[in-house]
Length: 168
Image (cartoon, rainbow, N blue to C red; front, side, top):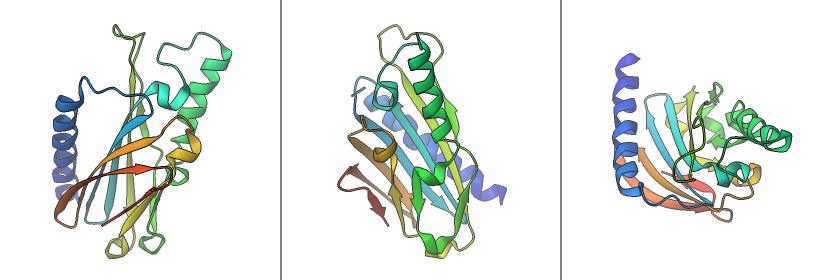
């Protein structure tokens, strides 16, 4: 089992590293990056988004309303199945996502959040798609740039409020 996790983690790191280098100056409000990878019985997701797209601001929370917005965003990632729906037939379940937020105000006024979600699937052969429900929880989010590694293939696409299902 660990053999499957390590290579998958390496693939995700390479994809995120490559995307981060080319997107370093491409911080766009309303646009997030999602990497999706499958291997064995695991489905792993890595999300990177401007905080503004999720909570409406990119600075340290300055009042109760902003603190509540950050807490609500963090709480939503504790239930990844409400944000991401793998193929029902695959019978996948996830632990709460790992969410990483920047500390302090950023120097350039931009701050990103990162989240990692891992699903374990009882019937991985039935894992054929993923519905992304982030748009329902985060109205400021308009587009998701997706990198997919599944079935031995790699591809990229873009998801929107109208097109929210990723199939492989």
